[in-house]
Image (cartoon, rainbow, N blue to C red; front, side, top):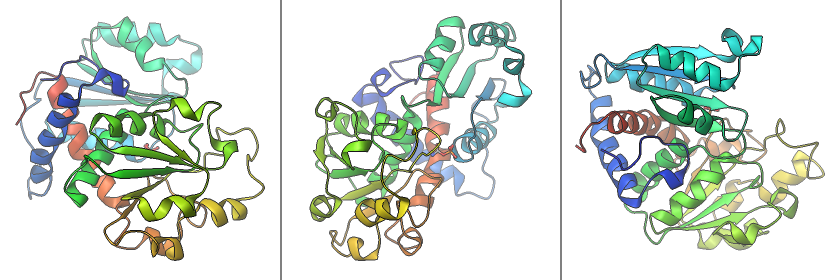
Length: 307
Ligand code: CP
């Protein structure tokens, strides 16, 4: 059981909840390595995936996670829903509530949309990414991956590099790292920092080269041209030159340090292809962890005991 009914932002969770989710995900990861990857745990429960923005990793992993727990999963995308006819989110929520679903996973372009949903229905809500706000299950799978690879979380220094101002991944990962005793270090050009980086609760650096040698993790954010108004730096080549991870920079990191990326990657911009495909990058481990962590989140929200 968790201390919350919803996972909408990291502040919904306690440090103990995070620990419970990560430990439970470890058991589910073992299930995912079996030939028959299925448990009867959520039989008879109905889970709706309401994805009103594009997604590959988050949507597919929630779908797979629901199937592996034997829940009845229903998927709804933006173009196929009545939102294109102008239905409000509150009306959509009440409509889905009338169908007695147990849990909704929502991705929406507007920050705050998952909270509106949670306030308008009885079902549990998981935020699959809302605008520039948060993406909490991404942060949880990132913590899982770091702990799996480096054996601990407490005391680590995690550099989050790039578009801090527009990133919901950073929005969840910064508080998540603090909750487990790690130190977030945000790194990027001033044009990609929020107006008040000092209130993020992270160390702030404008030089990747200076920050790199002291990091345990370099977490490269995607450059999100679809959210930024124009290019907030001279060119992609210039960005890659100062803020992209490449082999030369990787060689300046601690031998145990790892490189992470939430995907989808812009190869050659925030991460070079040789680094992305190297054994120091854990991008596919993150994707793999995503299924187990989302199984754990759904299972625990729906009343399961820690395993
Ligand atoms: N990391 C992530 O949220 O990827 P998708 O947009 O593919 O879901």
